[in-house]
Image (cartoon, rainbow, N blue to C red; front, side, top):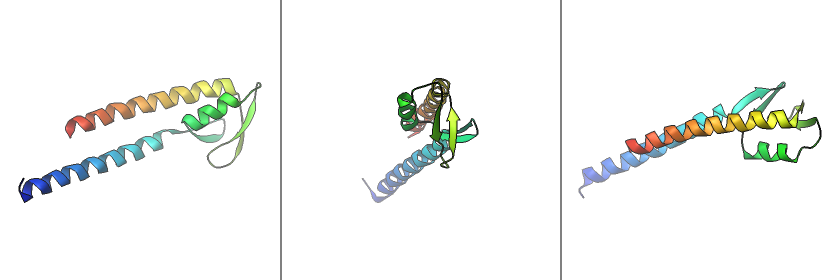
Length: 101
């Protein structure tokens, strides 16, 4: 390999890594949503917390440490669907990015 090929290869790897970071930041933002007067981050932590909630209502702290009363079963369905929707979209874009590499 000559120097020009090494430089081109390094640039391509750097561009791919940069694109992956940008894609992650994009979907981290999309995982944030509002519900019941609070801001939430859909993800495994919130889903696990909701699984532990019993009773018809629970009070949880949102992203800004504001206590919000929610209905755990309904909220868990909403979080799960939002999480799956965004993760599926992220996967599609990531696979497209990998093909372009």
